[in-house]
Image 1 (cartoon, helix red, strand yellow):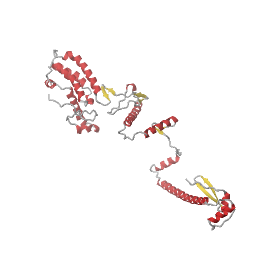
Image 2 (cartoon, helix red, strand yellow):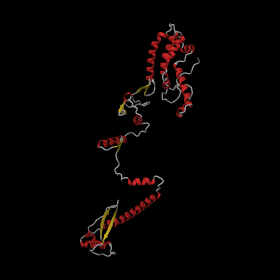
Image 3 (tube, one colour):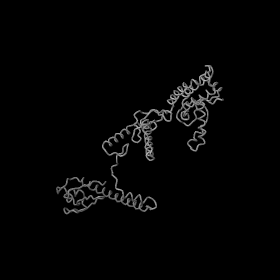
Image 4 (cartoon, one colour):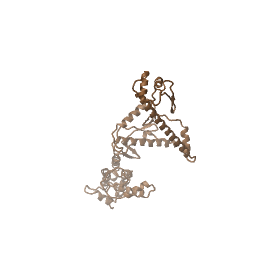
Length: 391
């Protein structure tokens, strides 16, 4: 911006004999017109004291010439401003000329320049953006301002340390996926029932209970701690305890119904009893074991106890006979060994699969036993199961 002009009365200018400065502010520039005075004429060689004395005798000015010095300083600053402005204007013209020379119809540079010239000038005031986009009403502006203050007043935590940030990010990703799923369903005319849908966030962290519901076809999908899909109950932490509890309860009911057939004094042969337990009871215990086979060792033992009781009842074994001896004599593969064999088979198939992501666990395809009970779906063979015993 240019310095503000100092305007003095025409009479005082004439008394000094220096003329009157007339300011005309035009768009984009300042024109300075000098108008010679017609009053008192002084010689240029006169000193400042003579000017001061002459002006004082005329009664037009005080004895000090501070304002005169201000005028001289103002004129000097104005000259510098004019020179700088001219240099900047020349630089802008040269830059624009170089830009015009660099335009090439073969690329998009010429089209971008034409488009920029055709577009109207943007507003100098930027729009206010909230969490849901540009805001217009006063209420939306107030909410955006409140959200901005809340973000500025939060603790300086890293994203990995802020639980609320993690939960919000997961919820946003899930909602974006649901929006894309809704678009795909509308395209192929597939209708999904939101009433039969539920949302589960699989994580080991603490999740707040006041999460906003996800939406599918403008219908809310509530959050739950567990979900049941294809007969498998998946809990939030993937410990598979709810699924194993339900499976054990159903297996006990099945064993009670089969008791008249596999009890010790029944005339049914031992081979048929063995087949009945393996086909009916073990199939119920090991259903979908590929998913939950890495559950905790205590859960697997609870599940295995149901089958052990059925085998002891079928063979009428006394209390001092070990379960390992019964399995060896019957040449029977129990549920625990079946889960382990199934896991080994799946990992062998993964090493030769076309999908490269399934080939990653091949380097960890070992049958060593550890005490790890980590249910984090780490693509490793269940390591909490006992080794295969010889038949």
